[in-house]
Image: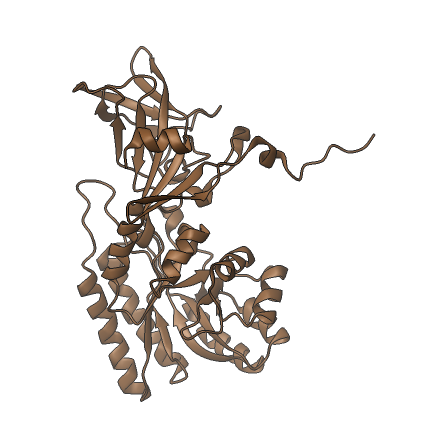
Length: 406
């Protein structure tokens, strides 16, 4: 799809998702019994519908994500459950919904066990266990170990079992997730931790979830995880538990970023080329209100330039920044806020800059900071462009706000 045509038709900044890239990543994971998409990575209804049509089920971490999943056609009553609520707390809305709509729960705290037991005794639940270690591409994406708020601490698993029994809840599944962007060495450690926890719970365990965290290659030097090797590790763990328990154990995986990151492109127009004493800046009309990963984690995204002429330009070392009245609105920064340059083709105002591999944790983390409207989103499927989110209007931006009567 020609970038200038997309920009002309839908405006900028613009998110574009390539459906074929999502399909390829779903195919990677077919050996697992259940692929459960962590929709927090990209929860647009069209993306959820795309997953549903490919027999991928979803994870929800809020009442709003449950409602999104239901709007896309998922149900907690299907087998395997189309929706599982995974969290460390119930807010009041979420507790009401999981009780009224019979949404399976993956509990990350003892209080969740008690609160669900008070409202819905007799149900089965899963437990999310913090195995005591974690790993991610940033400390902020590390979801295991002593500094993480996530999951029931492995040393309190016995307390969780006693509490569940007292509340009349059965434990039928276990889940572990140590962080986003982990490598195979750290991901493999979860297998033995899961096996130990499952043995503690016993033969009521019917499902184990490997969680998510599978990395993708953002830099040219990055390598993909060997999915076949990863599955073999988990399959061996599952088979040992099946032998011990005397029944089949379902093996789930819960990818988010892995399925959608590579599909996404954020198209922005270069609106200024600014030169200071020491640096050249490309200033574009997208900012961290559209893509927050660089300012949050110092995350690296590949970038390319689409020029509006046919010249073959040379390369420049440039800093890429956005329009926001905020010094941190820089896309070429490392964790800690250190500004770096990127070698990109020489460009001018009116050319387009494309931030790549932006399909995960992009639009879902967007904000209206500086009163910037949300970007439009487009899905490209079978050579057709589908507008899957309208660009937010200025009227929508202020909808719901009130000036008090005087």
